[in-house]
Image (cartoon, rainbow, N blue to C red; front, side, top):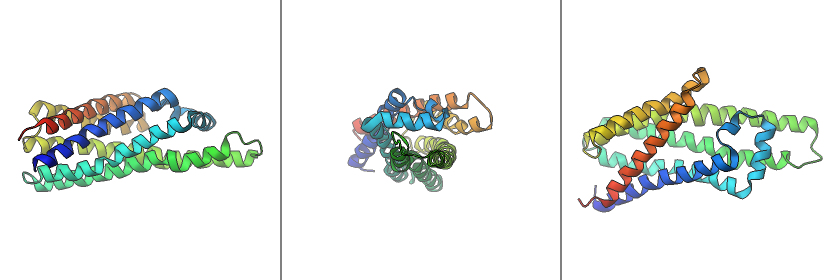
Length: 230
């Protein structure tokens, strides 16, 4: 890959974690995310409305950061495929799937929940039956788009992608062994987040810490690609 291509990939590898940190921190402060997801639907919708434009911008940031995975996947494939084409191709496919799952999961807040909130909050003419219907719709979409697609499939594929990306980058000489080992462990931790739904209460914390460490490694990798002279 050319020097210019390495810089472009480095900037994307740096931009994605930075955008995730800004957006995620904003969601934690203004929306009590992700703990808010375990509260009654009425509270979630009310707090979403109170978050205003700023909260919607944070969700948009999460969507954009997920979209950034797609060009990163493509560039990483170009970088690593000369060494191990088959593994790089599988990693690219899984990474692309993870991006789609996350985009679908996060975008529901902008395109679906936003519409439901507009009908639900501060509407004195809303009948009890209509209110209950909105809550049922939200719960169904939250379970399907959020828990099933965004969190379960999204975390599972991202964990596998992190593992395979670490291996291909190490094989191609772009990631030192110690960083590759940590990245593999992070991938396992990210994928372990799905075990929360089978009763392992610590899964959410393991997922969060592994994810934070992994995006830090990505940011450092991005900086190394930007400043690399050859």
